[in-house]
Image (cartoon, protein in one colour):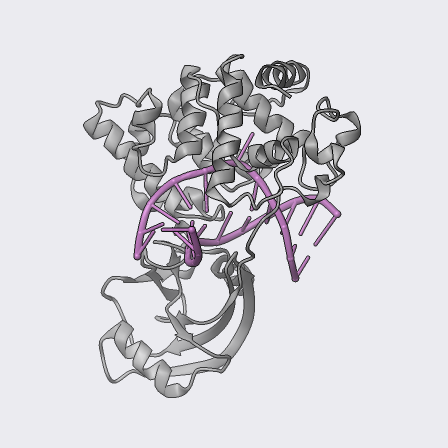
Length: 358
DNA sequence: AACACGGGGAG
DNA sequence: CTCCCAGTGTT
């Protein structure tokens, strides 16, 4: 099938079948940018409520640039890949401070922004400015690899280039914004990962995968990620008449970048903490030696699956009898009723939801 | 080029 | 359980 036929037929299909999504009735590059960052590696249905909340809280680049990072992370809480939120905030400040608040309007300038890669730059360029840069996302890789009957792993850079060439050679025959949106809508509605609608597909007689009965095997993925087991021991402190706990901000070098958590000790095999470890950790937190505390061991165990890790979370309740008014960062004293002001990973929120039954 | 980075939904 | 999702940054 030639590029012309592909583009024309695809957009014809789309005009009759397009999805109406919250970020589609605008040319505002700010809103389009927000939606594209939210939707990276994220299903449309999962992203929708976050987009609405984000635009309500930060309706333009200035309000986002003036926000605190913690505010942005709180709004992102539960969405995952938290670097996206930090890069979003970083870029908002950059555009606001260094570009006079004017959002870049060419592919070459867009891709320079932190958090904006080839996909997102093409998406913004086409949706906001109708520039002819074709998007290549998971939908497009699946659709085109089937159409062309690509029998090599799609992770292969050469294959990625072939796919990019195919859509780039097609987009010139249509309106770029329509073509790109059609590409993704078609991928998610017709050329689905499982049980695609080949029987009614407009490309069934051109699709190499369909002709060769290889649809269920394409796209081919080369490697599957082994999952690492990790053991996190979280200490839920009860201080000052038990209405206060302590939280700590995570670094930006591991999972859950810059989110908050309960003070934590990691072990590298499955075993409970011993009293000495509690002692050392509490001294690190409080900076004093004569602590008077009581431990109730293994109050609760929760697990969380990540793409490359399985987190085993053990939660210990520790009552501290010393009176405490001050503590040094990165530790923070927080009233138990106020913990929801901070952004936590899912496993901490799961714990809080069950253990902090107000 | 390979790997890390979350959480949810579908099968 | 496994797979995949409107990918990007780091090494």
